[in-house]
Length: 219
Image (cartoon, rainbow, N blue to C red; front, top):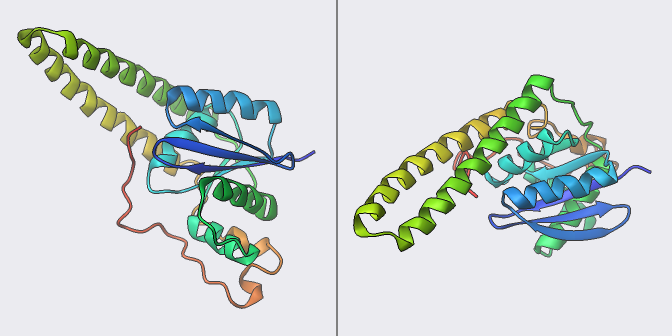
């Protein structure tokens, strides 16, 4: 049985829908949530795990799933919205979006492209380093709350340095994901969907993200 997974990504959470089972669940968009998601999805052995390019929130998710060797495709949100309109879906809720993304993956069937071992290892290393930095940041922020004024200033300096390092790692993750085979925004996957693609005579799809979208976003 072929399984297709749709993930709707927001700043705080990941809403997930699995077809054909119809299972829906949510995890936090943080290191532990992404690890839990990878474990759960590995049990399904999906043909493809699709998520929209949402301006940055998706890159660390895609990196974590690709590092776990799951078949990930980051797809064009304009194409998913057009597909949703073709289905008559106009409501905007996270759970509906996750279902629509899963149905889009089922209909368009983006072929997963395996990452080279070096790319997989790079993403795994970056995701691990990101988790370590966040753990250090959390520890320093907790110390700062209980510290004397002198120690609190030391904590503050370290927090600034760690935040700068986290931004650098996020930028590296963003670049690695966008340069990898999981990034599918430039493909018009709707061409192969009967009654929805350009052969239907009505659909125009924007294939590039808006220049106003941020490159990445922190957890």
